[in-house]
Image (cartoon, rainbow, N blue to C red; front, side):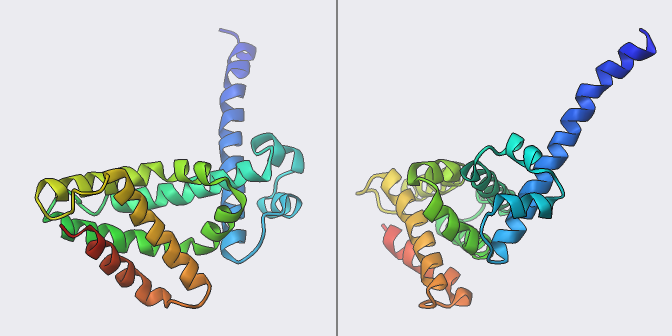
Length: 198
């Protein structure tokens, strides 16, 4: 293999690595800006990320595509925290309580992002992005139903949707100043467990 051939083979890998770094930098800059209360202005974001507008639009052709990627990053953070909760241990009510409090802390951190995404992304798309988290709640509800702790008279899919509806309603109440962020996790947890009680 000639030196030229080896260099040519290495170039695509280097470009992929550069592209991955650019994507991560852009998402980081967008998330920082949103959490600071800013809007997603593509030109300003390119400057903040230290990339050209051409690079930004190559990776994220629309504002919505970028917003989806930022939401996906936040949900990946939530999934990582959930993996540490040992949700298969203990009674379903206790496990669900741990999950809800953990999810509230994550949602509270990303409340500004949620408010923006809820306005700018279609509801079916936003729900699809949350699907990885729905599965953990559904599994816990299923376990609680099998143990007789959670109600079985309503569809499981409806109960899961209700859990996330209450979580996001709590975020809206906190954003509107009608609910304390410090109390919201306990409020949501108590409401959900009461609604699910068998």
